[in-house]
Image 1 (cartoon, protein in one colour):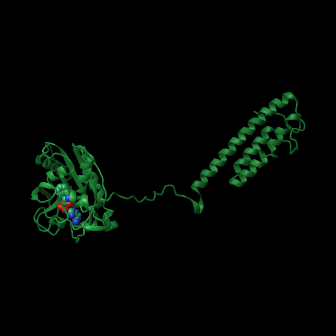
Image 2 (cartoon, rainbow, N blue to C red):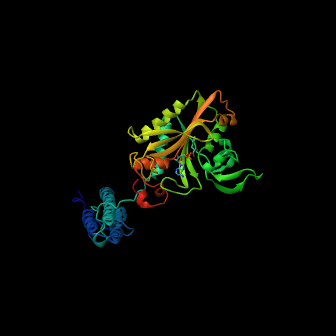
Image 3 (cartoon, helix red, strand yellow):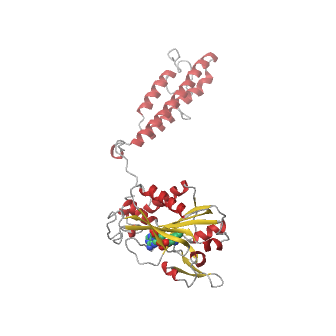
Length: 364
Ligand code: FA5
C-alpha cells in the first residue's frame, strides 16, 4: 500500500538526519527483517532502539513530517503512524515468543515436557482418626452432637461425680497418671483423664434433657502395654438422657453402630459388667477378626475383643446434676476406637498405632 508513496529523501528533508533514501515501505521491510533475525533479548532491545527509540529511524521519520506539504504530510503521516503500531505489535509478539521458548529451554537447560510429573507425597489420615470420624458420622446420623472436653481433668469430674469417691476400691480399675497440681485449697488433685466419662457430668451440668452427645478424646492410664493395651489411647463416650429411655434403646443404638462399622456378619456380645456410674452395666465385644472366635494371642484366647463398656446412667449421677431420676433415665457408653480399628483393618498390635512407624501409617 505504500508503493505510491514517494521517496522521502526525494521529497525533501523528511528524515531529519537523513539516514538514506528509505520510503516508509522500505523502512517497514527492513525493520521486519531485522526483527525476525533478532534472537535474544539484547538483540530485540537493539532493534527497538534503532527503529522505535528516541533517535530510531521511524521516530526520526515522524519528526521530519513537519517539513512536508499538508497533503503529503497527511498521507505519509498516516502510513508512518500505522507502521509504528505494526512494529510495536510485532516487537511485543517476538518478546512473548522469546519468553515462551526460554521456559521450554534448549540444549542442556531444556525441559522435556513429555516427562511424567514427579509424584507429590501425600499424607493419609491416621487409622484412629478414620475410625473416630466414621463412628461420629454414625452417631450424628442418629441425632447425636459431638462435644470435646479437657484431657487434664479434676479428680472431681474423673472420679467423684462418676460415683467413685476417694476411698472407693473401683479407683483401682483406672490406674491414674496424676498431675502435680491442686486447686487453691489443696483439696482437688488434677490428673490425666483415665476415660471420657468425666464429660458426662460436665455435659449434664451445662445442658437440660433431652441430651444426645458423643465425646471423642484422648485418655491416659498408668498401665503395662500389650497387644490390646496402650498407656494413651482414645475413647468415644456416648450419653443419651431423656424421659423414658430404656436398656432396649442402648442395645438398639449399639447394634446399629456395630452393623454400620463391621457389616452384618460380625458377631456382637453383651455381658454384665460393673462400672460405678451405670446400673446395670455391660461390656460389648466383637468376635476376634484373627481367629474367628477360636481363641488366639490377640483376643487372649477368648475369641472376643472387648470394644466398650456401657449401661444405664446411675440414678445418683442424675441426682448429682439436679435431674430427677424418677422423670429422666439415660444410657451411656465408652468405646475404644483403636480396638475398633484393629478389628476393622486386622491390626494385630495396638502399639503400632503410636510408634510412628511410617511403614504402618502409609497403609492407610
Ligand atoms: C471405661 O473407661 C468406662 N468409662 C466406659 C464406660 C462409659 C462404661 C460409660 C459405662 C458407661 P473401660 O476401662 O472398660 O471402661 O474402657 C472402655 C473401652 O476403652 C474398652 O472397652 C477399650 O476399648 C478401651 N480401652 C480401655 N483401656 C484401654 C487401653 N489401655 N488401651 C486401649 N484401649 C483401651
